[in-house]
Length: 133
Image 1: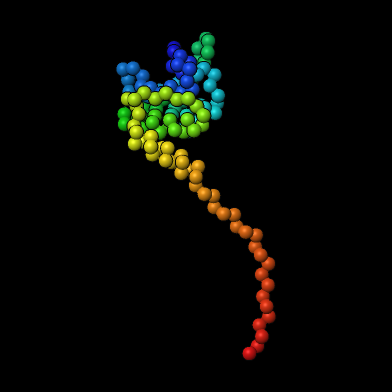
Image 2: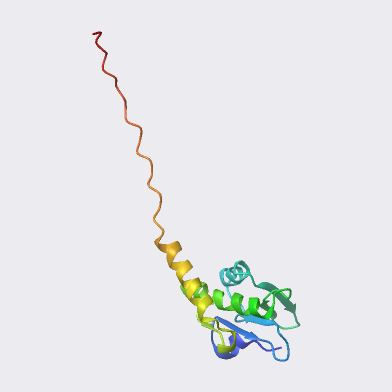
């Protein structure tokens, strides 16, 4: 059983498994849980194979998605992974430039979104006595 991320020296290798429409996201052997959890959160499903040697962990796009939806999922994941500091490879046949630009825009919008102002402490209100006319 091979691992493309180990072979290529990247943090995440996203590709379509040959002769199938299964989109894989391979991470290196012993990848940190933060990376695995990020892929989970991006919509990939975690898979595990226990062997006599290492435990292999990889992610796949959900099988119920259409081919276009799998491509969009893979493309949308790239900016989030790069922003988190990971090196990612995504082949041209899975890359959707419009989806990528939207994902980048969404990340920038979230990072730049102004925080609502904190309410100022309530000032003591004093009323002056009214004078009768």
